[in-house]
Image 1 (cartoon, rainbow, N blue to C red):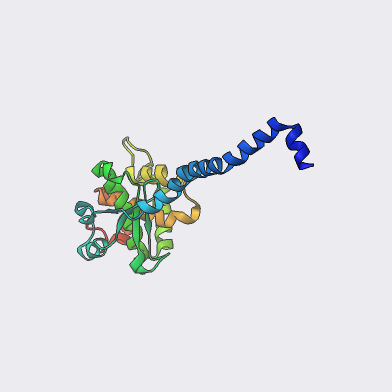
Image 2 (cartoon, one colour):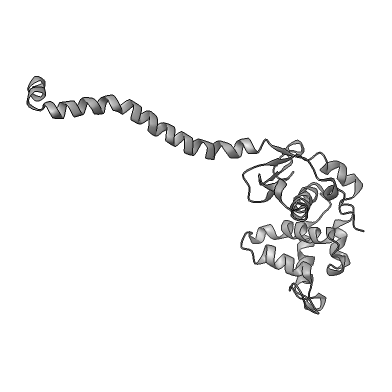
Amino acid sequence: MESYNIAAHPAKNKITVIIRKARIPLVTLAAGILLGVLLPAYISPMLAAHVKIAPVQSIISEFCPNQQLILEDVPIKTGDVVSAVAQTTQYVSRKNVDILVNPAFSTYALSFQTELLTHEYLHILQAEDTSINIIAFHQAVQLWFNNFNSGLPVPSGTNCNYTKYYLYFELYNSGRYTLADYPKEEYAYIGTMLAEGRQADVPANIQAYYKGILNCE
């Protein structure tokens, strides 16, 4: 039967032989294309996480001297993140605490680098300071935020409170966080504003939670 098919359909048999011979190169080519596209996309973030970024001393100096010693030892590495993410002691051991930043971090303006790193440093220090009652802090923040006698959450105007606006825009209305995230994120966002000199926006009872952490007293 096989010899009959070969004799009766020589053209078909020739095509079959060509396909069989070409199969291995085609498979190799297809595999190469897939590896060339998918492998870098998978490996690049892993490799990027090992690129270290030097700490910015002007940012670290925003914190109290005893906290500066801690922050100087926190590794900053590039990784597959949108802007910046801190790994804190709530999730890993102290020796593994670090910050991942976007690979383009070094091209950001210093003001944006300062905002990002201040926020992440505050996450780290808040997680390490067990004396901070973050739930009580959150309750105090909510009372202050909803008291319009202390200013409105708008960016400008006669009764504006920019720190409230910053919280509203970056946290409450951003859609990036759940309610469970609010206490820790409030701590980082408000602290970032305090580090920028907006003490007049924030009442003393809330500023007290940053005592010994921010160098703004």
